[in-house]
Length: 173
Image (cartoon, rainbow, N blue to C red; front, side):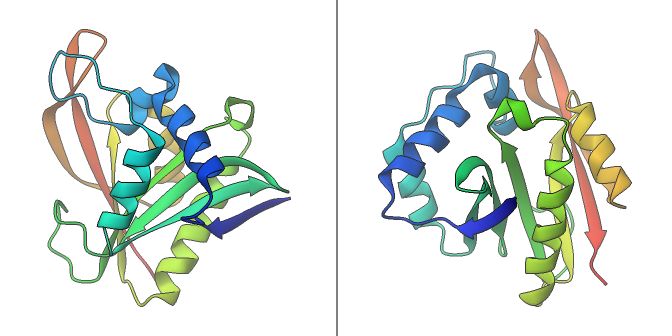
C-alpha cells in the first residue's frame, strides 16, 4: 500500500537511497536543470541532508510501498523563484526513484497527497516547473487541472539542445 511519511533527518539510509536516485542518469535529467553544456555533478547524501536542513520552508516526504521507499516529494511554501506572484503559493517537486513504479499511477497519488497537505497548511496555489522534454509529467499535471502560466525558454540543456521549463499552476479549492 502506498503511503507518505515526512523524512526522518536522522535516517542515513534514506539519504543514501535519495542520492542513488538523484544521481541516476535516467532520473537526474528530470530533476536538476542543466544550465550549461557541462554534465551535472553527482550529489552526496550529506549534501542532500544539508540542503533540506538549510531550507526551513521546505518539507520533504518519502513515498513508500508498504515499507519500501519508492520516491519522494517536496513542498516549499516560500520558494523564491516562483513564476507567478500569487500569495500563499507552494512550489513542489516529485521524484519516483524506483523505475518499476513508473507508469503505474503513483505520480497521481503523490499529487493528490501534495494537494491535501497544501490545503491543510492554508496554501492557496501550487506552482511547479516541468522540463519541455518531460511529456509524461506534463500529461499528468494537465489531467489534474494544472494550467500553463509561463515558459522559461532555453532554461535547460538536454540531448544537445536548449529546452524550455514550463511553469504550471493550480488554484486549490
